[in-house]
Length: 125
Image 1 (tube, rainbow, N blue to C red):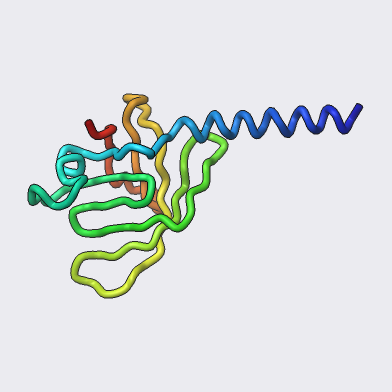
Image 2 (image 1 turned 180 degrees about the vertical axis):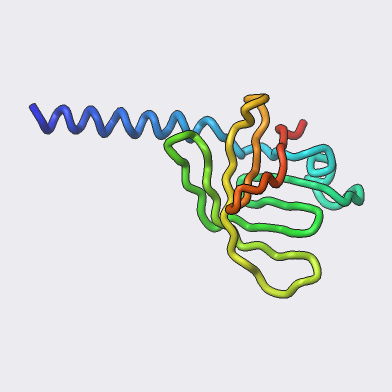
């Protein structure tokens, strides 16, 4: 009986995890105004730009390629990436968190490891 209970509990946790995973769907790009305009390449120069896809995070001055994504219990997504900054050589590892905006559930907020908000993005149309 205990084994059955543990199996049901494990299945419930996996289902809950899947539901959370479905909460942040990066299969379509998210971005700010200029991120979405430039999602297919640099079409418009912009000092500020944020584009988030299922594989990378691109800003006006850097490009980060995801190496790992981990869904958290609160529904947020912690991403480990290697980033290249404009004007610098090599890649630096970085972690950031993606979570739903408290103001608008359709938007995502990208926060750096130190808690600095990198920006808020909407699904590109």
